[in-house]
Length: 165
Image (cartoon, rainbow, N blue to C red):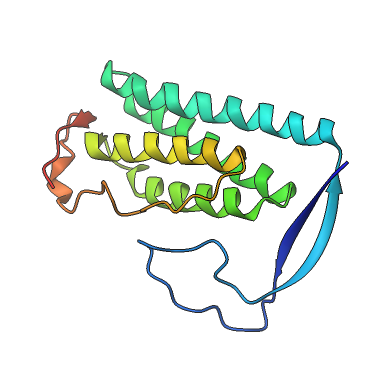
């Protein structure tokens, strides 16, 4: 058996303000509690998590090849959303918080026709960071590193476009 220590959020206390750019996973006042998972449960979770990350990665790379944006967006969003939920069930707060941030940044593209290439790169780097978190590494991810500030960089015809920062 492998024992994990996780953090339980106290909702009756205000959460401190942090910038999105440098948000640290341990931002809440917490109390400690332990939950045990078998080695088999952990390996099953990791296998499923890697499968979800692979789907997201392949979908993002398919944008370069002209895949239909809406279907691709839906596949990436579902992957991030499902991984966030599964990480929460396994009480892996770092991975849950990271995928929540990725999902939140992805959401505004839902009703659009495309995504700038720098966002595709951002999400691919986010997937790499997720894999690193799964491997037990401490990851500090810059959630604003690749993000476009120019809303006009998404053209009406969809797909992915070059974006200048």
